[in-house]
Length: 226
Picture 1 (tube, rainbow, N blue to C red):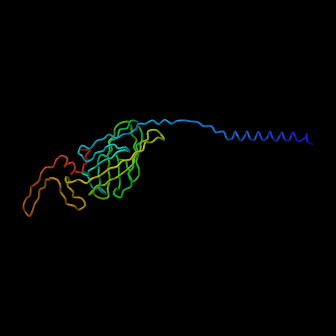
Picture 2: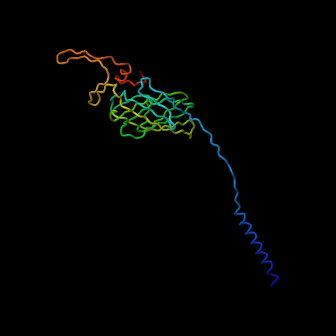
Picture 3: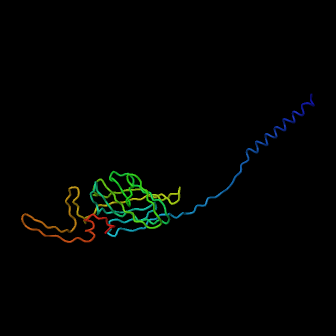
């Protein structure tokens, strides 16, 4: 009987060693080290700072996109109050798709850039490498009588699946005292002007010629066409 137990004991010892070795192997941790190299990537679209020749708008590049300052000289009425001015000038280094949108605003009815609607829904343009002056046709629900600030977003995609995201702002100021405002029932004349008529039976002829800049403003033509 005693001799028959040795093989069993030996088997138990061997099994214990195998289990211990397995558990020990299960707790082995392999540690690796790696590194990440981050390289700056130049933007495929940049802002060319500038301004409209007549001074109605100017724009500059910011860390997140661009900002534009506009004076509402050319405000007209066509189913709302329409402001047509240059918004920004872009330089594209490669062909791609530019998508722009304007954030929701109770003051805005619609917005078009180079003939493409970007509000109330986003709009996209296909651009080749080159420079582009973006002309905005903004329709407002009321005349600009105080400073109005609008914001928006734009992106540029030149490789499928790779897009560069930006934002922009535009500050719209009312003219100070150098346009004629006969809109919305108002009768405010701020520019030298020419008029002739009858005043209680007497002929009137009075006035001064306006400057080229004031003539552009009073005719309602977009300043970039002057």
